[in-house]
Image (cartoon, rainbow, N blue to C red):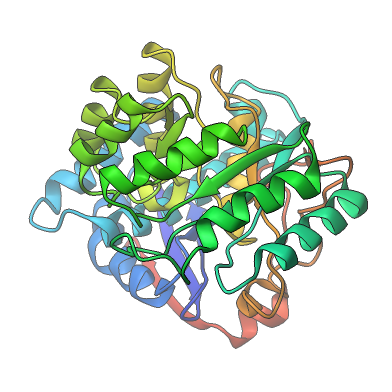
Amino acid sequence: MRITRLETFTNAFVGFVRVTRSDGAQGWGQVSTYHADISCQVLHRQVAPHVLGAEVRDLAALDALLDRVEEKEHKFPGSYIKRAMGGFDTALWDLWGKAAGKPVVALLGGTPGPLRAYASSMKRDITPAAEAERFTRLRGEHGFDAFKFRVGAECGHDVDEWPGRTEAIVPAIRRALGPDASLLVDANSGFSPPRAIAVGGVLEGEGVEHFEEPCPYWELAQTKQVTDALSVAVSGGEQDCEMTVWRRMIGDHVVDIPQPDILYLGGIARTLRVCRLAATAGMKITPHAANWGLVTLFTMHLLRAIPNPGKYMEFSIEGPDYYPWQYGLFRRDPYRIVGGAAQVTDEPGWGIEIEPEWLARSRYQMSEFP
C-alpha cells in the first residue's frame, strides 16, 4: 500500500496536511505554524516527490524515508524542510492510528490518560502584578499548579523589556502563588552568560525550577556556561531541527532539559530520536508546544508514551488577543484542562476533526502519485 496523495489546506499561520494511501486510508497532520503557507509549498516541492509512491508500514520505514528526503534535498538544510516533513509525518501517524482503530499514543507504546500541564504565558507587555493576577485566576479556574512567564527581552542583548522588570516579576509571582507552585521562566535568547548567571541567582533564590533559553540558542557554548554555573535546571532546544546539533546538545550536556518542538524538528519519528538520545543520557524531555494548533496534541500523545517525560507539558494560556488564528480550527476542542491536567483520549489517530468551514476558506494544493 503506497502513499498516493498529499493535500494541504493553509493560511499564513496554520497548514493542515491530509495523506492518502492506495487503499483509501487517510490521515491528518500539520506543518509547523507561522509562514505555514511557505512550509506547504516546500512540502509539495521538496518532500512530496520523495514520499509519494513509497510504502511506509512502520516507524523504521518512516525513519528511513525521512532520511532519504534529507539526502535528496541535502542542499536545503534547515527549518522549512523540517517543518514541511513534520506535516507528512504527523498525518501518517493519524492514518496508522485510524487504520488500526487505536490512538497514536498506543502506537507509540503508551496509554491514554491525564498529563500535568503548566500554564505558559507568552506575554512580556504585562506587568508583574497583572501576570500574578492572571495566574491566580487560572489556578482557581483550571487547577494549574505550574506556571511559566517571561523574563528579559526576546534576543534582548541584556536589555530588559523595561528596566527592572525581570527582578520585579520573579518575586511577585512567587509571593502571589506561594511556595508550593512550580515556577518556570523563559528568556527567549535574551541574555549574555554573565547576565544569565546573575538572573539565575535570582531564580534560585525564589525556587524557580526551569530556566529556558537563557542565551542565544544558536550559541551552545554560552548556554553551557550557564548550565554549568547554576543549580536551576536550564532548558532549551525548541528551535533546533538538525540531528547533529541535538547530538552535541545532549552529548555535551548543554542543557539539563531538552525541549524539542515536534513540528520544528520534523515530526514524531525524528522527535523520538531525540527522546532516545536524552533517555540514554539520563535526561527528561519537556517539549515546546506554544499554541493550540495540533503541536500541543501531538506533544500530549508523545509524553504519555516515552519513558523519559518531564514533569509537565507546556500549555498556552493566551486568548484571541494574542493568537486569534488558533480559534475555529476543530469541530471539537481537543484541549480541556481539568485539575491542572490535559487528557489524551482513546479515539483513533489524533482523535480530531478539522472544522470544514476553516478548510473551505483555506488555500488548497494537491500532489499525487501518477
